[in-house]
Length: 74
Image 1 (cartoon, rainbow, N blue to C red):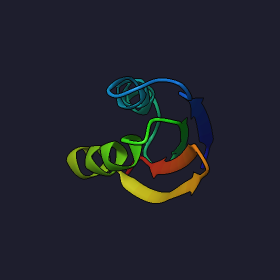
Image 2 (image 1 turned 90 degrees about the horizontal axis):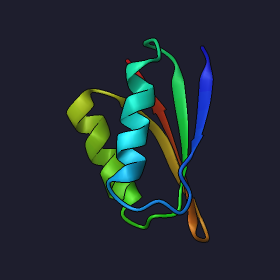
Image 3 (image 1 turned 180 degrees about the horizontal axis):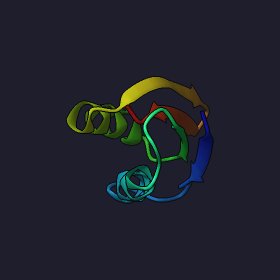
């Protein structure tokens, strides 16, 4: 199982989700994508992305102005 990291700090909706979708298209099922965001709306955006695209949302961890989202491609 591989893990990639995408830092989209400073970008606002819809850019974090669009950049994540681009990477997710190129990774194999079972691999992880960790996304670092600062957009307050990203928590809800990534929950929706996982529901719509059949991804597993492993966790979302908020720390001050940063949130780390861990997604698994299934």
